[in-house]
Length: 475
Image 1: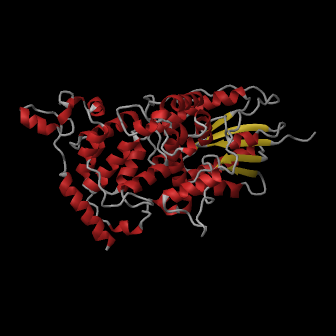
Image 2 (image 1 turned 90 degrees about the vertical axis):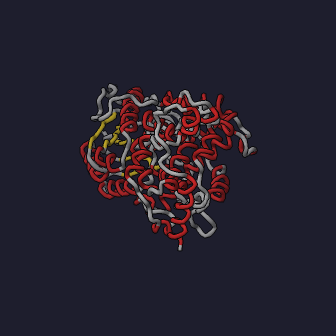
Image 3 (image 1 turned 180 degrees about the horizontal axis):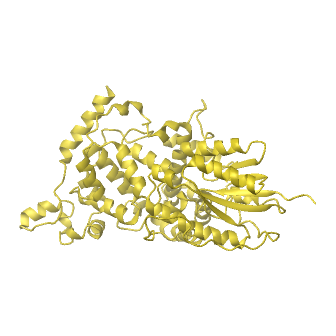
């Protein structure tokens, strides 16, 4: 009798059983024995500044995944190794021990991840066939290019080219694979799967079911108002799906298909909430493609090389005040406290806090990029790096260096009554709406004492200083 094939599915940032290309393809051979594996790499996570909330989120998602896989009779093994390079060795070892005939995984695009995958492919050469899929993006990186065959440096032409290709391909979601009736029953894994420094529960429920429920709710309830609401931090107007997308409890195709089902003609109207949200998914795609086209981004090198000459001030006390939400600028401080307490920050506020650190305090954007990664439950290297370089005017299609957000007027614009500010800064509860963005002005006028720091910088002077520093570097 011919020994049956053994297919190993290596899960990474795709922790779901629905619409998972690697898993679906591994299950196509009805006779094959299918195994699943996840490698935990604590040292690598530390090097990449992965937030503890994100590690806990992954941990809980793996417990859920093991339940879903157990229903299909697919066993999930958790392997702990320090680094990615070490993880490649462990995967190759597993393949040898279980005589795996094929390894299936979905591509990740950052540099260390690509090197890990090249290593495992090399180790398995002539022994195990390796199948890799582009599952985390709509279109494989390297395909949305200019007529000269180069990666776009500006978003809008990228989006136009992307949309042309997008509709010429199949964007359907794949179903859950069938139960492997010939495989013996397995039990789901029990916690803890690996040691967690932070035992407090993440603010997001990490199950595939929750991800799909939130997506459906968002598309039906919030998408019609998304264009208007998404900039108002006091309103729950954004999708809050980024944590689910970053570890793959949700696929981008599921996002598109649910959106399309809800509003089939959204592409004809680029001011509709649905189009504005889909545009955000294309930005995510843009940044994924960019790190493949420019591996230097993964080494924290600026896209605009002249900006490497900027003379940063890098004042440690000011940086600490920023991280703690103690800058004396209410909208900035409220945003930083939201991040520190929930592991998530409203998108508009990500831009404002980043701009404040870089332009007002003249602190190297890499300091902020690292800090965000260490706190964000949805930390995704490509999007985080892209966002920080955008704010720093060092990236592709970035905000011009002389356009500098004024934190006070931005606060008035997006949180006019200070509802968001009061929620995160209870010490400003009694400040009237008129003064909520300049509380010390009110305290001085009314002889009230405030337990809130004075602004650590004069925005008008800081703005001039920033512009001069950039112009000096540009020479």
